[in-house]
Length: 168
Picture 1 (spheres, one colour):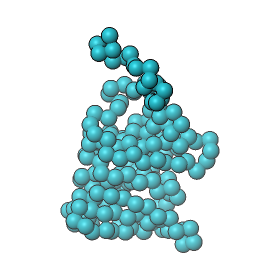
Picture 2 (picture 1 turned 90 degrees about the vertical axis):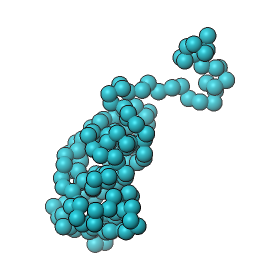
Picture 3 (picture 1 turned 60 degrees about the vertical axis):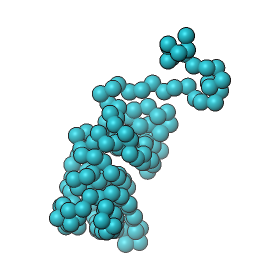
Picture 4 (picture 1 turned 30 degrees about the vertical axis):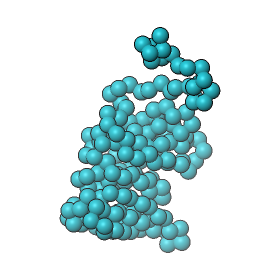
């Protein structure tokens, strides 16, 4: 009966592995391989920490870090996502895809919804594909740094001096 019914589990496996988590609806979950998982720690304790997952399918999903249940669909319809970083000082989410780097304002911190802010022009990336993002905040100078590494081996750093400043 175990072979015909996938819901029946071996009792020995239950001791080693936790109970399965209900999967979200098929139209919400990722339809392709997940490329990265990014833990986003919230500044205030009344907001839950979340995991951001990104996949080949161009979706960015937020998951509750406490119980791994779907928290919110953050973005859909993007190109192949290569990296994600949270700019915690300005409350922005930066997403690198095969077509460029887009920056989003986090407009609802509880639900974690975002609004398009701007993007790094492709000509500044020398038509290279951004592969990795990193972030650094200098507390003394109050400057945010966005670091972009591309498939040509070039690293580019952008400085953000305040919330309204875009370094282009």
